[in-house]
Length: 226
Image 1 (cartoon, rainbow, N blue to C red):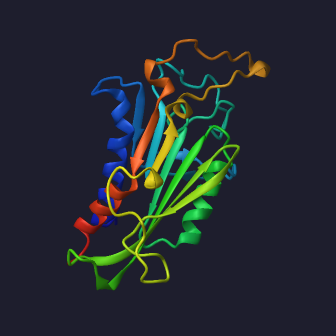
Image 2 (cartoon, rainbow, N blue to C red; image 1 turned 45 degrees about the vertical axis):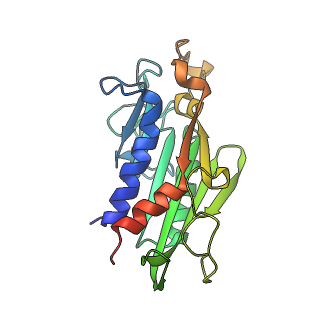
């Protein structure tokens, strides 16, 4: 079962990804789901589910015409035949950081997954911050196809030490994650099967999702034991 802080982080991240939809709740251009089952990229016939899956609405990227027996395409789909998620988020609380990295790397082996955000929440410390909350180390790592990975230590203290991080206020660019909205609408042509992507694109395509890690930190501190 999931913890309060796990679900709080999931809920806040989902809100960040909904912002470009501009309040549209029926047929929004960006579809955000939790734990939707997808075929494992290693083609073993098993399914895996992320904490958050972000995919395009079929008005902009149609449902894959023929995904094959394992739903791996190309183009691939989830296990229900919807477009495969383009952005994945995984949040680890009890799961080890190594386990988190391995799952994120597995997702990235599916080229239609353009971006994976992994967040690890480490155990509570016995020390407290100036607000009386237990200190906690937190780490975020971002994978993007074709680019080096990036990571941020954004808890109240650094992992393995009592040194504070610089993540102590909202709006600090050093602790903001920018993900291109265009990643959601990745849809390359596939000449071998005559697949041609739609030419219609939402007006939001040129922007970014902006995730403020300070706000993630704060919602974790608020939900943890006191």
